[in-house]
Amino acid sequence: MSDLDKLASHWKNSALLLNKYNDISFDKDGLAWVDSYIEHTRNDKECEGITLPLEKRIFIWGAWFGEYIIKNFRGEWVEPKGMYKGFGVQLYSGGTPVGITYPFWKVQKRFEFGKQDSLIGMDAMLQSIINHPDILEILSEA
Image 1 (spheres, rainbow, N blue to C red):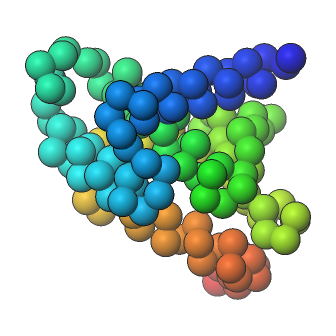
Image 2: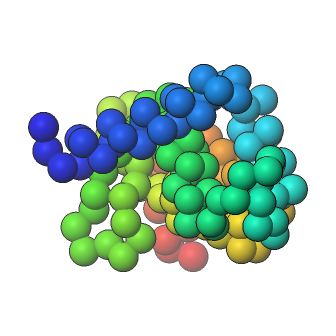
Image 3: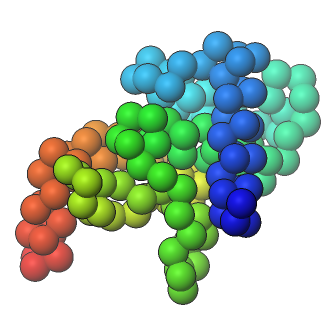
């Protein structure tokens, strides 16, 4: 098993453990709950009475969001070479790679900037890319 496979397994297990104890589904309702939870706790030092540093909250929710993307968009964890953003999820449209998204980075931005960087908005954008992969070409030409 490669190091990436081990990390992906760890992230998946973290997300599933979170799901098990909090009954957070990997669907739109679960995404709305997570997005709202981050909004309500993003400036807090404590979450439900347990002190959690921001880095751990980014890891927990980044792992959950990555698994959400994998389950809903049939992606897979990847480690792009030469990328500063770290580990990402490769997206496909009809079996063709169409891009990589970075759930940990997105969650970090969600904590930092609030509602303007919502996970729900990211979900809608990913759905558009999957449904219309040519949109990336159009955007790159603009």
